Image (tube, rainbow, N blue to C red):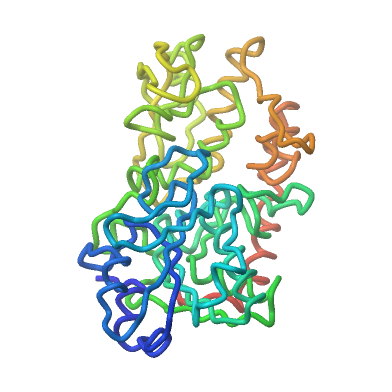
Length: 386
């Protein structure tokens, strides 16, 4: 069974927080190996003084909807102030750090560049560097493994909160390894202390970790969802529902104007490795098409070790584009800087342009050389062997 960073912190790495005033960036779903919240473990540590909580997207309670600003609150369970990092600012302020001896961060990444917790990590390294205190990063498994990487690297011109780091879409790194990369690339003078896991190896998918899968955010529902997420999250930038407001977000994909039977048949004819589609009907209770009957597909995983999540998602996008060329569209919404949200997710315009010109094969033909170079560049930041 794998031991998380928090389990190690309260063991051989306890010296990193002992007799220190600390702030904690975390949420209640972050637990130790016995499912006890990290907040409780650190507050009950008699040798440490936990004085302040910081909450990323969805808040310390992990109860806010995606994209919803979270206000400052007093956490009624711990009695501690909970500073929002998803409100007026996405970074801790200097004032909230001035009385701390160290900042601790324990968040789950799910293996995709879109996920916002690594962006919160980036800002944590930045502010800890500015106030010259250590940032203690508690590591957790990458639930979709540490060996497979997919997609192109982020184009710096499309850097945003849904893509801060120069990594592929499916990056194969742990949260601690991302911290080391952030330190090495952006803040070489930072004091980043990663508390590693024990017993995790790069080839492990979450079912092999030996611990229950805890939802790290309201729509992070299952391991299967996490494995599909690097591909199906791209639908966030289209006029197709990706299942938000249902029990199967990122697994149910559809629209009121589509026929899930046609979509499933087209998709399955492409013989995408490790997955199969079946038609479904659903009615979202929030997000796009709220209250409308939607016809679409559920993507089922038949072999998790063969899944190429990005190819799965892009093939499904091509299904909608091919079958509904006059209705399907990649959204026109932008971030105020005239960058499409789809492009922010994709980390540039190349993937969208490949989809629109039916040239996705060229995009994926370029992937191996890009990933090979990234494998070499990221090696100094890796903490675990195969």
